[in-house]
Image (cartoon, rainbow, N blue to C red; front, side):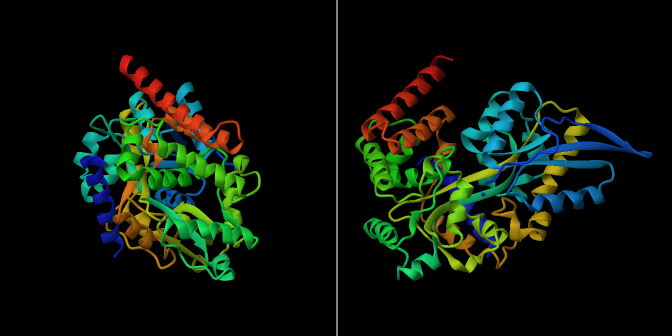
Length: 429
């Protein structure tokens, strides 16, 4: 792990703990809407189009609050599920129809829009508005590319292992403390009629959370970090062991039936009632559990044995194609939606905020334990740490190993080729 990243993670965890002591088909009201003005009577309004994630239930109330207090600005929210959001952004980027502001992630996901000149440079605004006094510095840094601030941060997330107390009580299990115990529990759940791992393979990222933890186990932190920075070969025995373990879990029936094509939301729906035992998820899951009508106290969390937690940031990026007045209105909206005022009002559903000076709710009991786990070691989540071309190869490798189209050795070779191709392309471009 680089010293810079270690500093980011340290700032992330310390500030979050101090402050408190990230799917169904998405919908959109007008995809590809652009900035402009509207008039009602004699009042001229600047319309700010915002694309948010479907799970951001808090944004509806926050937008209504803002619109009521700001008669000269109108927020128009369109909402998407995670993967439809990624697709909608790709289409809008290619067609020049990005909204004023959109929700995205840090690392290599958000860098695409910054690298291609699609986002406004917010560096001077961040300085003038003293963002370090408003947001965790690590969150700002995760949305900074080539020295330029590219987004207004709203979430900092830690991901680790959740378990169903209903399932665990039924089988008289307790949170495992070793990898061997973890694996024994997987088999105990399978034997007891409970699906062990509530993970959906569609679009790759849900199963990836297990893959990265297995890689952390077999490679160790130092090699894991080198793999993610493409400074070590992916054609390594630790990578082969990782894919072999995924194949073993697949062959033993530890995943839901047909999981390769299963949407992550469908998979987690098996977890809520205790039909499956484990999920690898983040600090937002308390809110999702409650929204689905289940009791958050029926669940617990534990640190994946021998592994670090994965962490990541979410932010609102702002279009580079705005006139000055619309840009100012959009920044005002973005800073409001990410403010401690909004976070504290909607804390039960907001998730893990990047804002400072917030108070966490008793309705999110697993947030602090997850953050505490991350203080013991963390890494940037794989689909943000790796270049997106290599991420897609990882997702393909997971599927092909499960479908017996590739051996674990071929998966490792495929990953190394994707990494080498990316480095060659970017060396010459």
